[in-house]
Length: 248
Length: 85
Length: 207
Image 1 (tube, rainbow over the protein chains, first blue to last red):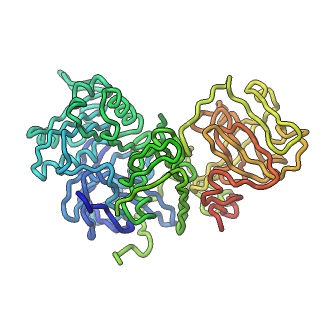
Image 2 (image 1 turned 120 degrees about the horizontal axis):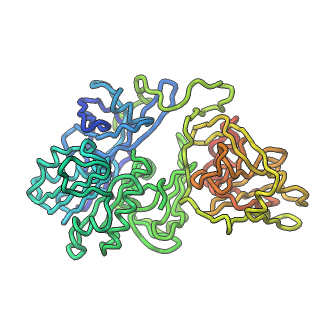
Image 3 (image 1 turned 180 degrees about the horizontal axis):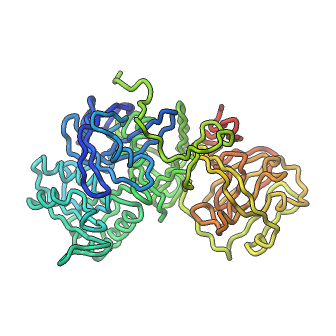
């Protein structure tokens, strides 16, 4: 869509925590109300800034998990064991309290229902968050673009949005899980890390010219992008968002 | 492959703070190998400051240092930058 | 003008991950003590094999010097315990290294140079006055915490110049170039302070 470049200097805004949703043992979704939220597109992120009483600050980026919903913005945050920011967001922040954030940010790793498909989403762990925003946006628009999500998690308990994904599947959306560390009894699905063979089986063929969005830890995204290129997919059609070595 | 590496969209906030427009969709041509691509797809490293590198040849495209009130940007590694305004 | 917070809002009870039970006299202004060892890099980690590695002293001197890894490791080395300070505000206390003093590397050299540039695999450079790397103020280190220096922390060898912000302690260092005049390096040409004394909080140009 022409003329949708986001303009204007980003400014820090105050957002209020409205609700906390437990997704998995290590992951929570925090729903924020941002009074002057200009709206956002699926795949965008925002920057959160915490300030201690003595002025010490830390900033982190979090992908927006929700589809556009007025002034409501949901972030799905993985609590990192020795994290600087994530434990505060998941365990300390109480409904009614405020945090500073700026956004929405990003124009490269975004998807809109008007984008031509087929759409192939590849998620490693908490990398599913921006891809879920895409899936939710697609559902809210009643869009039926052929879409597949290949989602790698350690175990069934680590699968974020598990029930909602199952509910949304169908109507052109296919969900494929791979569980790398432990699987439920009777599991017939993939039980290993995403590799070229798996991508060849799950992704549309190069002839169908799919759009790819891959998100997760840097080594995961790197392996996926390399495999896709080797399978014959066009490099510019593979958009990546790397979280760094351990995720955000 | 380097575990530390991020994509250009990881610094989307910083770039928009400086340039006042969304920059991850800006297209840059590498001054060394000539390959063009969106800023969102460049390789980002965080050292003392931020370094943007060409995903094809590794050339330093840009360096960014930010204090509270000033930003220094070296764009010498980018031959030309195309920005949608 | 869009509404904006006048000053940052304090996050109740948040302190971050820093260590707080430290003697404040050891912490330069604006620094915080970290428990871990953040890995920061201007580029991908080089992986130079020890067979190919060498360290050189070149530029404004009587005759250049060069050591292979074996020759370098045969030089007298020492254990060094120092506090280190990164311009990104984290400090790490009592870090233990092992390395060769720059005084040893420059021993007997005849030069009119007053400045050095440390240069590294991957193209990184940083500059210092010669007097800031001599007299027991700088080393080329090859071990950290009793173990060989890991590539992500600058191994096989990096500079250690603890009296300056840590960007001056170049990772993956391959040599020192001696100059008559100062030649600002990778970050010094892009906003960081040419000297970088943490005790005077010389982070940026003009500080």
